[in-house]
Image 1: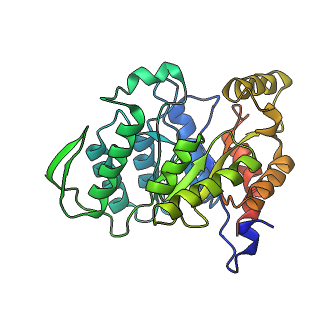
Image 2: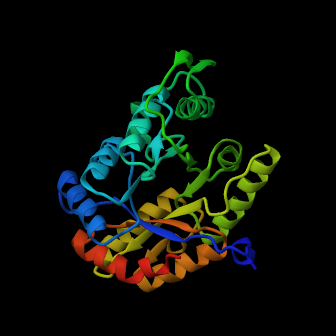
Length: 309
């Protein structure tokens, strides 16, 4: 029996939508996606950091989305932090949280998804070390009245971010390799995975919890999540094959069908497998451009939203 099943207070399952490939231009697709999620009462919408792809920059998209809606939560999936000024990122997040309290869900990552994008994020030292120092700067600026910090890569003297969030923002991280998982346990408030099987996610959860315990801290039981890539039922065989080839390139050691969910019934079953491993937060993305966002959202609301608890 999983840790999720043994707790006396069941963890909250939440299912949001991630911006993905679209048949429309990114601006039109973002408008349709955000309005569609709000109209259907969907929990959250998530924006990737894809500087070299047709996509709206995540912090811009988050700000635009919360200005347009009243209840929708917005997240980043994920913001590449090394290569960005962490003080500016903290100020941006603080402003968003002031304008839309309890609706801002930042997730950070170490590096861009594709090698072609990595030159857009130059760093002044080893990427992992820069990442950890930058994350420390962001957290301190979001929680302390004034910050003086002299690190290896960043220097602040009496730095202030205002207005600071009345309630501290949870800072989540991505990553799958052991060093990344231990970093989540040491420094973060949650974990959002990508391209993982349920069994891998369960093992990663245990690694994170052990690292947190060793560091004298805790990652809350329901702060473990994953992206879920779904092939819409109308997907052509050619598009499905391209999606599988992309997954095989990303994780060549795993059968793509273990990572790619084909249809909504399979998506429901996969969500349950993750829940059995203690993973309760989901960002569902179309693996290929859906025929239409409204149709995809209607099917999502019918088949996956009822799984929330």
